[in-house]
Length: 150
Image 1: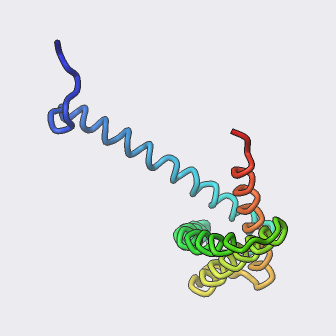
Image 2 (image 1 turned 30 degrees about the vertical axis):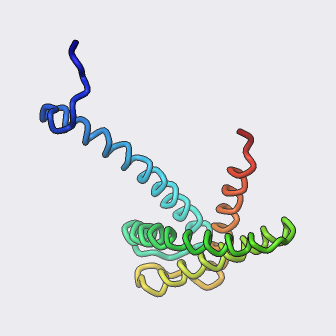
Image 3 (image 1 turned 180 degrees about the horizontal axis):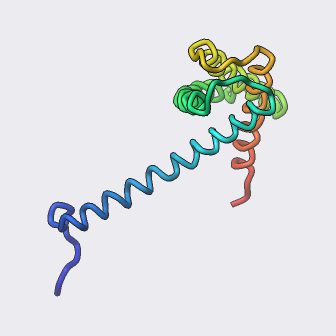
C-alpha cells in the first residue's frame, strides 16, 4: 500500500515550489486586499476633504505607514477597551468611550504622519474629520461582527 504522506523534504522540487507559492499567495492576497481597502478608502476620504498630496506614491507611503502604525494603535485600543470593560457602565457610555479612544488613536496617527511626511498636507479640521470617520467605521464594523448571529 503506497502512502502519499511524504514529508516536505521528500517532495520533488516542483511540488515544493508549488506548495510554497500557494501558501505565499494565501498569505499575501488577504493582506493586499485589506491594504487596498485602506488605500482606496483613504484616497476617497482625502479627495472628499480636499487633502493635498504630491503624488499617488506619497499617498501610497502614507497608507503604508498608517497601516503599520494602525496595527500598533489597535493593540493600544484593545488594551484600553479591556480596562474600560472592567467598569460596569451602560452600553451608550461604553460606545462613547470606545469612539473617543479610537478617535484619539487615529487622530494621533494621522497627525504624526502629517508632521513626518512633507508630501502630504492635512489641515487640523480635516485630521479631526478623517479620524472621526475612521473611528465610526471601525466601531461600526467591530460591533456588527460582535452582534452578528451565528
